[in-house]
Amino acid sequence: GFLAFAAQAGHVPAMWALAERHQTGRGLPVSPERARTWLLQLAKTGDPEAHWRLYVMSSEKLLDHEGIHHLRLAAQSGHGHGLKIYFERLEQGDVLPDDPDGGLRDLALARTHNIPISDRLKELLTPRLPAPTPVAPTSAEPTPAATEPALAELGAKIAEMQTHVDELLGETRTLRDELRQRDQQQVDPSSIDFSESKPPIEAGAADYQRGLEALHNRDPVLARKRFTAAAKSGHSGARNNLGLMLLRGLGGPVQPKTAIALLQQAAEAGSASAAESLAAAYHYGIGVVADRQRALGWYELAATRGSAPARVGLQRLAAAQTHSTP
Image (cartoon, rainbow, N blue to C red; front, side, top):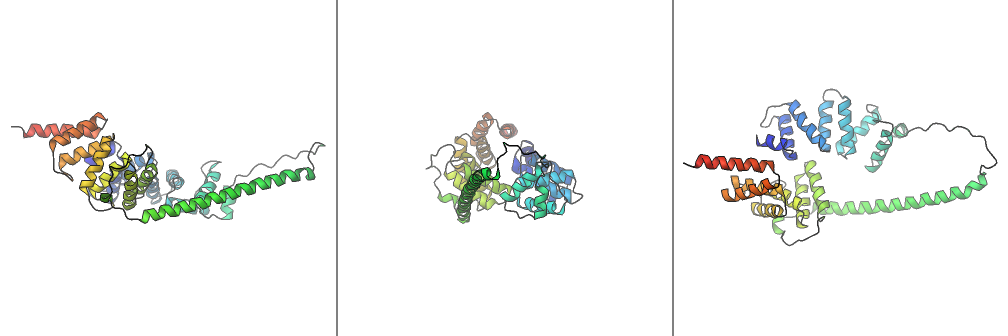
């Protein structure tokens, strides 16, 4: 019931939980139709994994137009399996570009992700221009000798652009290697003093985004590392997410003391979600001793910030108080 309520309110992890439970039968009856309903909701948020799973569900029966659509969107979002299968199906002729410009987009997609494609497919994806209409030469038409300097200048500009592209690729590879080394480093959130940082608004945005991507890719260990880095920079969203992960033990051990501190910092910075999570923690005694007055205070703060679950929490507290009063 809580999962359904959160999912209907737009909570992405709750949508994923319901979709997976209806697919696997873990705690809920197996229902591909209901799983597909939640996956479609997730796909509307641009989640590449949701597009991939919808494709898989279609391909188990018959690869219809909708299945191809979700496969293409998964590939265009950078989904690893989606890219591989999409270009395999392009090579086999099972899938065609979606519009006249789709071939160019597919070529650009292959270059972006370093996906090798055959010369036959490259030729198929390259749009064919109509043959030019022959024009009778005139006296004003430049002679071959006159066009040589222009061609030489164009060649020089192309060479200069290629040099710049090579430099950018080298810088990208260097940055990628540095990020990979950072991902391999072990970080203990409890050893970091999150109260020290007073950064600008955009601080930690890149690490926060990479943490979200790791969650979508079902990699809680990497997500926890990235949220830790962003939280150290003062990102309130990262502090909220990291606090929830530490409270639940996702991607590492449970650390309730650090989790509550992070959620409180995020709530004090204006996060309605963090205030709502703190209220639930004190309401049900998750990571802390249950405290009705504190739960009430955090629920009220979250409700004033527009949280629908917080308003429901206030109603439950009021109902529980009424039943306990003689």
